[in-house]
Length: 381
Ligand code: NAD
Ligand code: TYD
Image (cartoon, rainbow, N blue to C red; front, side):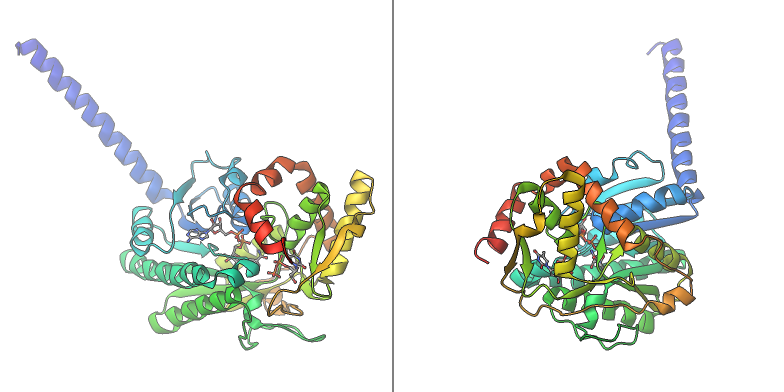
């Protein structure tokens, strides 16, 4: 090669090397500059999406990794408004895969997790419990192991486990679940969440891992998959299908608007004491039949026609159906200091309105596999 060409080549190599080095430096700086690096598991699901939509704009100095394998319940379109944010990335990953979880935590230098990924529907757990054991129990154990390894590397790790009030079992006509209520799970879903809660507790007691657990009541709001009562009823009423109410319809749930749950998660994640559990609830008990009637009435008001409550059909009960859930949330109300801010009247109207405004979203969820699921669960009920 002539001397002049060789000099150009060396200069070209030097310039490209410099650019690559600069890029590496900038990436590394961006990684080290984030105040926290948080994995949100199940970030494409109902509560996870709402949580990411709330936390991303609030904490621009944090980096969020959405860890989700996108089951039928995961939907990345929920996150369109944040997907191009600099402090957000998505990792398609199954928490049942132990080495993939460990690798993800190491690569992203994760220092905390808010763990929501789960199989979450009681009826599906009755139909096929083993997937619930694998995802909810083994998946949680994999995350706890990865958390311990990360703590060895970086010196600290906060593990926030998001659980449910269903671990406590069923209440009679009176009384409330408090944090020390004994665990008496009745469905495979509740049992798998209870097992995960116990593992989280054990990793704190045995290994000193910095954990917090929250046990929340039934959530409602935008982006909930239409296998759950409220979106299912809205969709069926829209489609002119029967509105299935299990048993006598007198089972009671304590409903909380999802954004209020997310605010509570934010508070506990930042200010909850290590090793503590916190109950979260809406102070809002309502029997299923009254809830379904209310949704029908709101739809009649917004859309005309009806009365849609005439489409209610009492169907065979769910086996082991818990009668009543109700949360005493005084612990979290006192410290760190949380109260629901959305009244049920406000929240349920906003929710019905959201599903009516987002018919396309609902139609996309309720296609393909969902139709088979619906037929299997309700076809001969
Ligand atoms: P969801 O079913 O809407 O979403 C679950 C998400 O987890 C989905 O995005 C799914 O793709 C993902 N996921 C499932 N298996 C996975 C796996 N193996 N690997 C990676 N990702 C996986 O659930 P949700 O209603 O948003 O509930 C979130 C969490 O909150 C759950 O742990 C649930 O037990 C808990 N919780 C829910 C409620 C409620 O009313 N929905 C109340 C209290 C607690
Ligand atoms: P769901 O939304 O499945 O939540 P969870 O079982 O976690 O409480 O159900 C809420 C209540 O509504 C519960 O008591 C079961 C009842 N239900 C019906 O009556 N009909 C339905 O079609 C569904 C899905 C639930």
